Amino acid sequence: MEETISLKEIAEVIKKRFLLIAATTIGAVIIAALISYFFLTPTYEATSQFIVNKNETSENAEFTQNEIRTNIELINTYNVVIKSPAILDAVIEEMELGMTADELRNKLAVSSEQNSQVVAVTVTDPDQARAATIANMIVEVFQEKIPEIMNVDNVSVLSEAEIKNTPSPVSPKPMLNMAIAFVLGLMIGVGIAFLLEYLDNTIKTEKDIEDKLGIPIMGIVTHIGEEEVARAAERVSATSMRTRGGNYHYEKQKKETV
Image 1 (cartoon, one colour):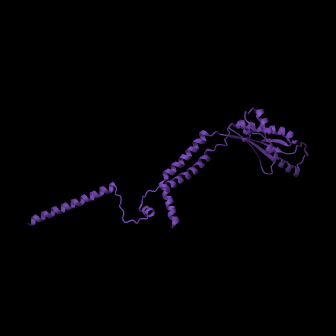
Image 2: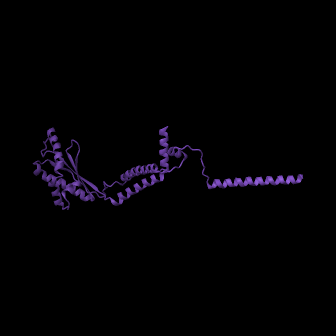
C-alpha cells in the first residue's frame, strides 16, 4: 500500500511540474544542437596502415611461427617509437606544420588488432586532406628511420590514407549529443521538480493539515466559484418569485371569501 501511494505521489508531482520538466528537456536539446552545429569545429580522420614482417624478397621466403610472434611483439615497441619526437619532429619539419611534437601526438592514434601484424596510424584534424597527408608522412618517416633506430627493416606500407572529396566528420556528432542532452535535461527537470516540491511547505489540502500540523479536521469550507454563486442567486430568485406568487393568490382568495 505504501508503494502504491508513493508511486501515485510521484505521478502527481510529474504531472504538476510537467511544463518545467518539458522546458528543461527541450532547452537542453536546443543548447546541445546549437553547440554541435555552430560552436564545435568538425574534425576528420585519415588512416594509413603498415605491416610488420621480415625483410625477404625471395619467392621461397617463408614465415615461421616464431618470426610472426616476434613481429607481433615488436609492434608494441613500434607503437611507442612512432609517437616519439624522433619521428614526429621529422614530420613537423618536413611538412612545416608549425606545431610541437606534443600537439601532433594529440592528433595521432596508433592501433593494431590482437595477434595482427597490421598497424593503423590515424590522424585527426579539422582539414581532412591535411589529416591524410600527415598520416602518410608519419608512416613514411617511420619506415625510413626505423632501421636506424632499431637496426631492423621489416616495415612495409600496406595502404595509404586517401583524400576524400566528400569527407564525413567524426566529431561532433549532433544527434548523439542531442540524445545525451535529452536524457540529461529530463533527469535535471525531474530533479528540479521534486526539489521544488520538497521545499514547498505551503498547506494546500486537508490531508496536509493532518500530516504537517497533526490537527484533526472538524469541518471543511468549500470554495465557491463565480458560476456557482450565479446559479445559487438564480435559484434564490426563482424561489422568491414562487413565494411571492403563492402569497398573492392566498391574499386574493382570502378577500373573495370575505
